[in-house]
Length: 529
Figure 1: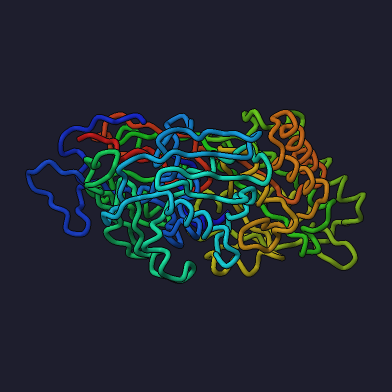
Figure 2: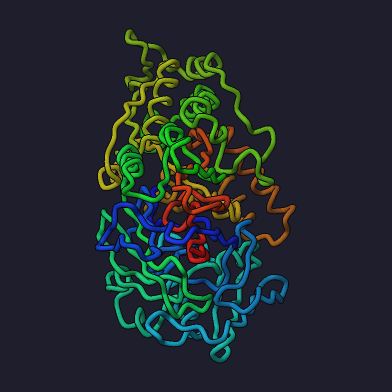
């Protein structure tokens, strides 16, 4: 979906050796020096910026936000490890009680001590009905959170929510600052303070985020003292600035990344759960028709998109779960079959018109399909989808716009959207498909309504038994095959091009939201010039 906050929606350690002075950007930003001293700065280009830097409103909920820490974090393999907690939690009461002992001596970047009270404040504020956090549903299982002194926190759950520990990578905020202002409109969202390795030095909205090393960081002060993320929404502009030396690294689509081979930059491929999909809103007389949905689902040539648009950097998608995931339901793959798609439409009464576009009951099989301006991958997916749809007599009118233009149109217009999280299938599917979340911001953008799916999602969320959860998500994926509220197209790999002066870097399996604290700079605080 839309990146409400650029989650580093993946997360977090292998230190990369750097040559002294290698981190200098060849085009200094904000007065960075370019003299003979060993430079300790880096500038990278990303596609999106967060709407807020407040974790209370959703920023960094999947961890690795750079400004903040969670109780836990991830290593390069996405295994959980302690951060603000001193150890992994003690789980008791059949998976309903999680006890965290906190790390000693941690301070916020303003010098104030971090305590259990800050953890309680963070979670209770997010769960407050007045707080505008679109992801608070992922904490539905929390019944209470309690501080036991300054160094122990106890979570009690309503039911044994299997992925709860994954939710405790959520960043912790200081009660002494955030507690004194309106959670939704206060200044904390633009002037954050956390315990993380970096502090916010400057945020020029629409242009750049500049971070400076937190010298008092509990994990040791980062050697990369200044880390700038340039906000460049247009893929071509990002590539041009990288080529000119204005950037040290950038995320790029495959067709632009390949141009940098042999140019002194390295390309890193991060596997991801990031999918591209077309929403099929029930409020539209065409996309809300089950026959049209089923026909479109087998009329799209997914492999051609992988080969042509992604240049092999990805795989065909048949739902939110990648085909190589242990949670994928075998047998739900859809075969490209435009002939069968046309037969479905014929049987349902959608008859071809003189111009080749079908009609039924006076309704023309035509609908708008929006994508975000400047996003070449979404544009190419949308155009390929429209081309395939036209071959079966359905017209998808491709249009570009900002999210401000697109969002109010989502109840009736199709959107080339994205999503995906590697941590747990509940994170991928609950907000995407639950009928009672339709119209809730960017949750359930297709207004999908399937009672059987609702029940299965609830069972998958509430069961602590892995086999029961697998069966529940199998049900969801089979239902999506029979009545697809979205046309899933591809799962894409994320490609990053970084100047090879930085030595050998690493990547993680990434979520949909990426770039801000993901990519090869996911652990920039560990780089050693």
